[in-house]
Image: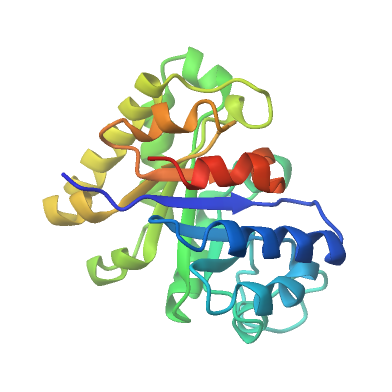
Length: 250
């Protein structure tokens, strides 16, 4: 089956505006002939700088998070309306750093996801297990709960605007990577789960990215697996010479 590959760069809490502009310009130039789908997700303070640079290119503009309410007295939060006003097309939700460092639970992530879909944003829903959960044999159980609760109340018609990113928490920023076989096994499990929830056609079409220390030297091996449809890249997304080889694989 031919797959659509989707390579996303999560810049996390890095870059000044000048640095972000430099990186965005380099990526627009070097990825212009790329055959896959691309996205960059800068920090909130950088979105307005990056937006005009990627506009009209083959790189989508993403945000790393958003509030669960449209507007109001929510000090320190950024709303879906504000993101759309800046030209954001996609929002990353449920990243492990949000789940584990900032205690976001499945109910909150689900509320954000439905609000994003209501306003026409694409969502990258992140799922993944901790090391102790994997060692206890609970990786599939954890991922199933996060998928089922994350997508609760989402109709099949909206699934076209959802991407799932599997990121084993123990492999994020640690230099450890799930083997391509381990990663593909979870991706296959998630695809089968989507099939149970939404039908075989939806399972075939949904894009499931791998995230967790993706680098130029392991990207092609990961993406060669049957159920891996792209990558959510962290540290390697911060420099053109590490992100571009991943983005242009194949």
